[in-house]
Length: 370
Image 1 (cartoon, rainbow, N blue to C red):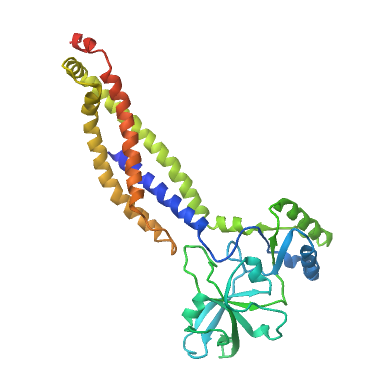
Image 2: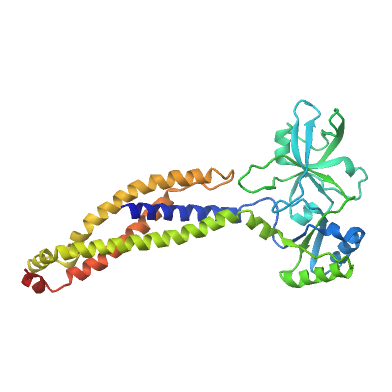
């Protein structure tokens, strides 16, 4: 019973963790992480960064290039600013700030749902910001936030800078799904380049990486060309969960195997003890299914009892695990039905195999044995 309680619990854990990982991979996170190459140390090229960017844009395999080290997965620049709305200066909130250029939003595949993107056609964008949907709710900017103003604290003595809202970007996950989406503002900054984000046109990333490395080395900086793929950085965010998923699968298989070995041994022992009884029943007309049912029913009762213990325990433990995610799946009844069904099927096949052997034995041998 203990072995099968553990087995059912591990099967439930495997199914729930697998579902959550599928949810993480398929959820709309508000940006397109595919075919994005991040060069966080572009600043090592010094004054050659603009020339390097131009060379990349001239590459037919490059769709877009953005100046920014603010990325929503993996190592990223971090900047927090104290923001308050004009209509309520008492409402102050430390807010995430992304310093980006005009190409950041299209490169990342983000969606502007109101207003406009930064543009070189406008000379006043240096004091303009683009906010996310959560910032609208946080700062009470419902209605039409475009054209409204927020205040940014510039020093500890009460100095403030007015920032005009020119656009709203659809909420995206700037952190992992463990954390809620926080208010965020983007501000134009072309003065200082710390990193580059490159959007590839081609699926042949390896050749593009080779070209990027050659262009980097052509400037003779002596610095090592270092890069990362945004989709890999995203997956590394959930490295612990991926390991847990793999470990659960292995332990579920091992535990079921050990439990079935024990069950096989118990059925064999019981069949040996009831060897003569089985022979007498066969002589009196019992069929093979009847004898199999005779041997199986007591064991199946114990397995059903173990399921009664394991199912609510699995529901409680996996519910606690899922609470660590702000964005998560809902556990459905079929997960527990499937876990119970798999366990019953494996147990029944184990019992049936040995029981059928006992039921098909020659009854004369058992009746001669005294």
